[in-house]
Each structure stands twice: as structure tokens, then as C-alpha cells.
Image (tube, rainbow, N blue to C red; front, side, top):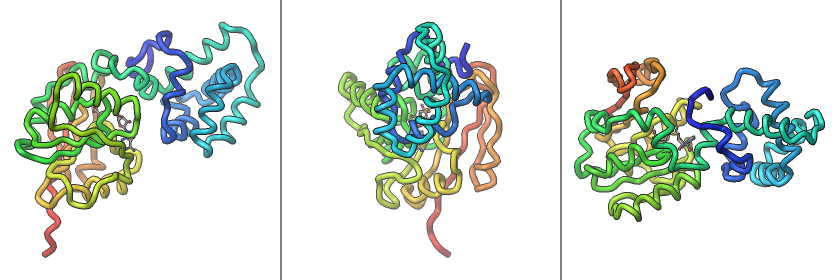
Length: 275
Ligand SMILES: C[S@@+](CC[C@H](N)C(=O)[O-])C[C@H]1O[C@@H](n2cnc3c(N)ncnc32)[C@H](O)[C@@H]1O
């Protein structure tokens, strides 16, 4: 079982990495995913890239800042032509970044990802009155929060930096005849929206790599009198409270999720009126 249990690695080709965006490649090459064992990650990625030159070419062309890391990984990898060893290395890497790998198959996210599968949208509706509002969902993913909010809001803008996920949401909008959702690119901390645009700016599992600039950006695009919401959905693991948010004036709302585990939502009322 993988760390998050979001993917069955055997179901994925190493070519899934051909769908990665530049920011994902940079992150993946820097961190090696969620595993603590960086040595095995480096070895596996080196073997897998040496055996898949088209994937290596794509990653280097798409993310020039990763070229030197990639060269180092490939040059240091033990040479092998053993197909079993290569596939084992591919599986290890696919599983190490399972949160990226699953974006190759957005249609599987609803069943595989606990934060979607176990979530009840009433937890969003309890956080703010969405009726008639202009809402932004930052890092919208496959649209868990977006499509829930669209049931009440006037307009929902789903900003999402991964192309496969944007296309998935656009296909759903078309298939379901949804009229009040628009999907756009957008990567924190540089969102493509003017200041003071939205009544509600929401996200789930997005903020946290770089708190200060990310929260400042959410605040920038939110109107005075509006709300910032963080609504991560239910998890198969206990979540922890977030002092990073409460210390910055966010309210913390606790509930026991559908898996019997602790869940924390957060919200902050934004006032930009200077005294
Ligand atoms: C685990 S998914 C959660 C998707 C959705 N927010 C939800 O809760 O259902 C994390 C999402 O954040 C997006 N993301 C990651 N880093 C981001 C950033 N710096 N700015 C905006 N979105 C980001 C990913 O592309 C992905 O869609």
C-alpha cells in the first residue's frame, strides 16, 4: 500500500510523467516525493530515466532548472537492461509522487482520494453563506469544492495549475451543463486576478508550502468584507490543528470526519478598511 493509498502504481505507465507541469517537475526533482529514503528515490529515478529517454527529454525541456539534477541521477544510476528491475524502479518513483501520478487519471480521484470520497459538502456550506457570491477556488483539483460551491454561488472560478485537472473540470462542466463555473490556470503565490475580486476565496490542500506569501495572495484577491476558507475534506488519518492559520487570525472549526478521524476547517473574515 502506498503512503496516501491514492494509487495502485502497477496501473500507471512511467509515461504519466509526460503530463507533469514545470512546477511539479521542479518540486519532484528537489524533494523526491514523500519518502524519507532519498537514496532509493535517487537510484530508482536514475534507473527509470535512463530506460525512458523520451521522459527524460520531456522533463529536461519542460523544466530547465532540473537539468543538472536529472543528469546527476542518470549518471549515478547503476546500469541495467533488466526489464524487471526497470519496472520496479518506475513503480517506486510513481508511488513516491502519487499525488502527482493520480493527476494523470483525474477520473479516478473521486474513488481513490479520501478527502474527496469521504467528504460531505455540507462542511463547506457551514463555513460561509455562498448564495449569490463570486467565489474563487485556488488549486481546485478535480473540483470537489468548486462544484459544491456552484450549487449556491453566482459564479465560481476554479484556478488550477495542472492541465489534466483543468481539462477534467471543463469536461464535467460541459457534460453536466454547468453554467456558473469557469476554469483557469493559476499558481500560488502569483494568481492571475486583480486585487479585491472575490467575495469568497477557498482552498483545500493547497496552502502551506510558503505560508506568508500564499496567504497574502489569497487576501489580495479577496474583497474587503469577504472570507478566506480552508476546507481540506475528510481524511483516513487524523489531521492536526493549524497554528500557522490560527496565529494569523483564522478561526478553526473541528469535526469528526466520515472515517472517524479529526478534521479541521479554517476561515478568516477579511477587512481591509483602514482605521
Ligand atoms: C490534493 S489536491 C486538492 C484539490 C482540491 N483543492 C480539493 O481539495 O479537492 C491539491 C491541488 O493543489 C494544486 N496546487 C499545488 N500547488 C499549488 C500552488 N502553488 N498554487 C495553486 N495550486 C496548487 C494541485 O495542482 C492540486 O490540484
